[in-house]
Length: 435
Ligand code: ATP
Image (cartoon, rainbow, N blue to C red; front, side, top):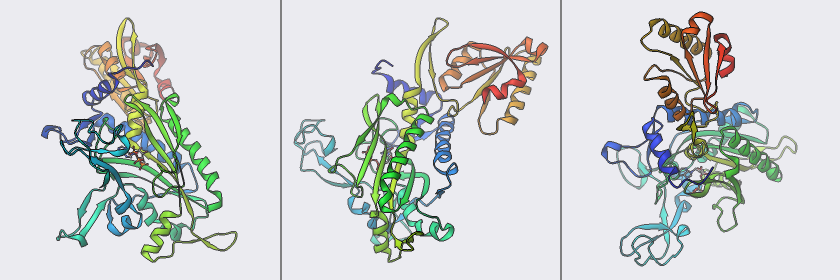
């Protein structure tokens, strides 16, 4: 794919025009770092999350899924180090008062916006706060979780007590997280309200390397499953100075976004940092029994952390395609079939012929019955060419047209999104073909 300087703009505009993603509170001028998902975006996002859940939870015997609360008791985030440590070093411009992440600055003395003098870098806390109950004081302070992981650690003992899992085992969850990012930007890349898919995989300390490698491979497999271009993904070993406060080894999976090569996902060895801290802060014993040695141990943990929104953006950047078909320019999303918001669209050739319409509705209804997990669309607006273009733009892999021949021989035209090729197939064959 040749570099296209306008690619991001095209993706943002397609997302808005076709009901994938809208800036939140648009009618009030928007709010930086917040976006809403429309019908097609939601379908695509749910497909990403479902594929992740299937791979990391349902297809495995050693991972337990949970759904914990977002509002988090402050003691939890004090113990985890977030209330102290979850802050970026920022420098404030003495002239325009804008703040910049110190690690993003080329010149740490000069404001990149107005050229003014930058002050010393200092901490800026990144958690969103709220208060529980009537009084708004220090005692009622709580946080919106900055990662889904802490809800997993606080449920660790519950899972152990209910299920008695043997090490190694994982606890997974998908959910919202909040970060008061100083410079939200690049559409869905840096948001203030995000969604994460995380597993905390608990191991005996001596086996952390095996688990790390197993999970690294699982992440590569997931990247392939959702159709992110693997030639644009690379792994970066994070150096000692740059690693998060809790980690002993971290790999970032980076993706070449149109605005540069940036972190897509992270894989971190968090040691027993979290469980150890929660154990000493809560006073509750979190050690579990090692079946072999019959000794109690505090497990270590490996964490694959994947952003849903960054996945969504990388999928779109990978899928957005412009080409020429039948002498006409077109835009289409080359989405994997299992990801496309609409799997197949069904059209009557002409909308003013009742016999075609009724046959098309019949085909649509019967396909819907067998297509339990994916969405179909019925479209009779405009001419066939326009319908194809509309479906191409949202990445629908198959278009099915009912015409006069259908009434005679029960065959339909099946059109393939990528090649534009049309074949005549029997109605009975449709389900198998679009599956
Ligand atoms: P960055 O260095 O880009 O700020 P991070 O290292 O803080 O990211 P993690 O704390 O490792 O990110 O979060 C895990 C995952 O959550 C990231 O790999 C990314 O997919 C997602 N994520 C984190 N912050 C954001 C954000 N502000 N907007 C969208 N997704 C995010």
